[in-house]
Image (tube, rainbow, N blue to C red; front, side, top):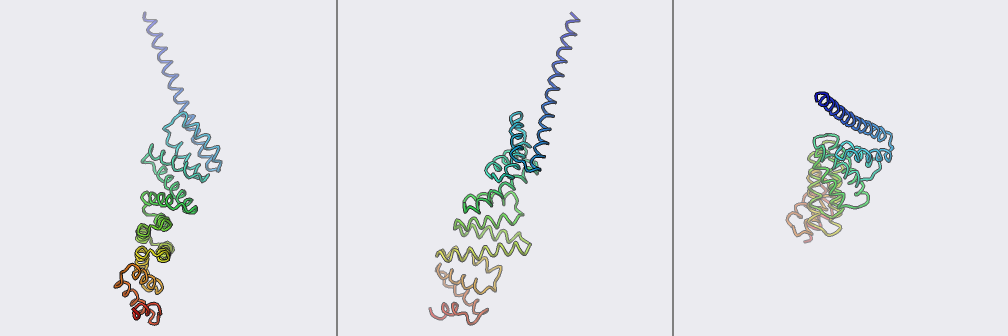
Length: 256
């Protein structure tokens, strides 16, 4: 009886050790695959990397690094839809991992830039608004979100994004781009007869550059078209203080 019990105990131990070895072997295999994937991405062999990503996920569907590396491979291929899906899954599985957060940011920025270039302004705005929430210190997000809103003719939203960007930008080149988008957007709205939207954008621009005569003239026209005659006349008076002979300001002020 004792011999049988001893034999049974030995058999249980052997089974446990075998299972443990198999588990360790599987884990080592996954770790090895992940290293290979990282090397393939570094070598820009993205399709090969994705094949191995799929292999890892078949074995371990919750392996966050596989989704992370998948997102990075898709970024390399400029496949933004797949990059976003994989990056979101990686962050869902590992919400405290900085690399997952960074990769989602890269995916959002790439997807937004691609949409902006294709004039898919609604998609671009969605991506960049999310990007700004993820990386609030990056003024590029505000600039591109503003441009996307301008493409949709959402003047107030564009103005808020561009002004928020100016509030965070210290680099002169970045500030110049943000301000330029304000004045270009204001003139775009003015040309379309969207006087209130134009006044919003041009008013914000003039706060940044109060001695710009042409911007003040356009602001006065925007206020005039919006029925804000008092503010329009104030703008034209500022024009004449800077350029006493300006014919457009004189026409509005003295030929009413």
